[in-house]
Amino acid sequence: MRATIRGLLDELDQSLACNDEIIRWASPVPVFGHHKIAGIATLGLNPSNREFVNAIGEPLTGELRRFHSLATLGLVRWSSASDRQIDEIIDSCRQYFFNNPYDSWFRSLDKILLEAGFSYYSKERHACHLDLVPYATKIKWGNLGRGSKEILLNSSKNLIGNILQSSSISVLLLNGQGVVNLFCDLLDSPLEATSIDGWKLARSNGSYVEGRAYRGIVTKIAGIDLGRKLLVIGYNHNIQSSFGVSNKVRISIANWIGIIVGEFEFET
Image (cartoon, rainbow, N blue to C red; front, side, top):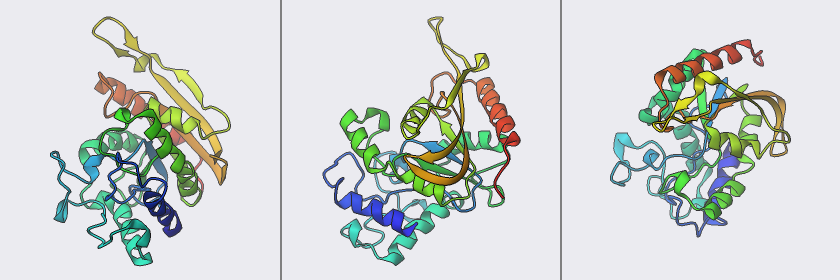
């Protein structure tokens, strides 16, 4: 993990040095939780700015602070971080769910994970969270320009494969259509998609948003051989932000995940 983080830090001082949309003083977050003991991981887009700042944009400090920054590590440039300082970044990632996690975002996903017998907040049946891009941005991912998204994705294209390759993770859960689309860009073949009537979201104008489930077995991501079979499942609705996601639909998605994961033979 040291080598992975050092590479991410070098990117901040090199190819991403002129990207003003990144919170440059914030450490990259390659994983929320401990990927070495997790059996399942959720996948999102990139860390929220709220992992580093409060509602009015002030840096989180003291007991509220979740991750390291240039200031907390006493650094001027990320590329000058020592192994000890990188280990501090790693520790903040691994201990995330047992310190001050961003519960308003993670609790709703955790309710779904519980149906599969896992939890972010458990050390015995641990779940962790990964993002396609490990850098927090000043504005939400959806509001970033296309060029900025492409630069960030390109700089991080090997991250997920490298982390999964060195992990105990057997199941990857894709949260939302945007994540599904970008993750599939890293695969040699698409995931199997299935329409599910019970996941339809009604609109006030009488139309609806179709519900879709995704599933596949993956052995390579962005050309990186995982060395094992990884079960990848997902859904098109973003549990935290999709308009009109009813509790009934959430429960149905959770039940589906519980069944699929329950049938999967985990690596031992």
